Length: 491
Image (cartoon, rainbow, N blue to C red; front, side):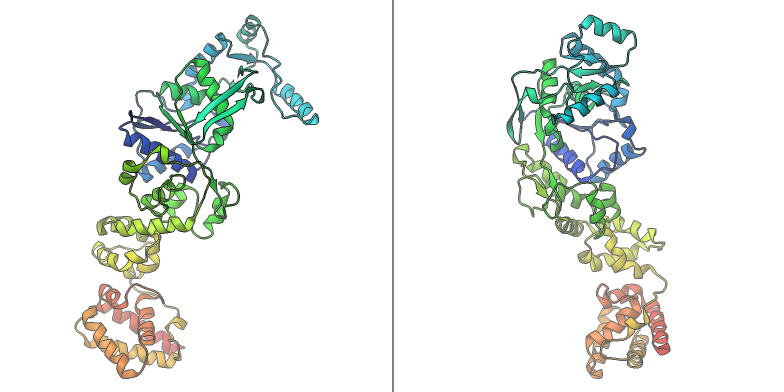
């Protein structure tokens, strides 16, 4: 296959979301697999909806995912600029070519006129569409009115007879009766282009070979194909990806569903996923398999995806978003990280909580907590107590099942005596001594070790007790057990 040139072309009108990330991923994989280039283009012509900071969030999100582009607005490239608002003159030039070749025309209809026509069509129960009012204005007259400064748009002159056959790589030929198509606006009255013209011009100028985009563009697909053909350009390979469904499988997933997902620690937005402790490896693996016809449980790195990817394996079938799958892939990729890499990723979560992290201690706890992590921020639940000077257990949690506060205090006191008598509380020394006490006392391991766990870690669930105590250290453990004993004696 020849080197492919692909692009990710988002609008900076909101957060980078799951659908955009998957589109970028597939475009990236195809480019890298074929030795081609992947570029980022910002389609910011909808100025009113542009959100400050959105472009930077897109750039940061792509870098976090590891989808580094070869050309883009912040790094430049052969076909710069890569923001559409900076390419206005280019679109004006191409619009003029269409007008000169009777493929487009100036439209002088005012918004009020268009709205009046629309309401009349709705009353007649017709689908609203442009009535063609300015379609047949003589070119000389239209040119003079434009030159005189009369406000106008530029509309595409769609063929009114025949059929448009557009070929989508996943769906095959899609036939549309031209009578169903409209004379869409290509240049707005402010001089900026609509997506329809700008994207087609940019894809041609930037030599894009494969247009990989969301299925929401299928409705405009016949128009886009007609625009490309009106210029006589070679068409790219069009790939419209499958739609995402809600986790229930009923209805299309929307950005609004993120609020519901957030209730159980998930999101459809990439920045949220990063903040929630998901890894780029887990997110990419999860996103890749929704629409790619490989085994749903395949654990793949980005380099493995590049090796295996094929647009022939993509499927148009809708995919239900399964957040449990995300948890599975994320946990799996966490376990694949080297101890050094995992330590580096976990450290910021501890420091954000105001904890002073000892790097040697952090390295020691990795083997204890790695298997327990689904997301990176789970490290706080299983490891924050290692970096605290003291812990604050709930007094009631110190009372073992089947015992009262006084009996539990006696257990804590005995554990304190045993551990104080030991020169070291490494698990090879402390565990046999305390198990011997369990045997002698007639108590259960859950009772004795449960009290000890809450006393030393401040919580009822923790990594292995004796390994944890060894890392906490003798003096700190004795101090914490003493504090727990005092709490029990007060009850």
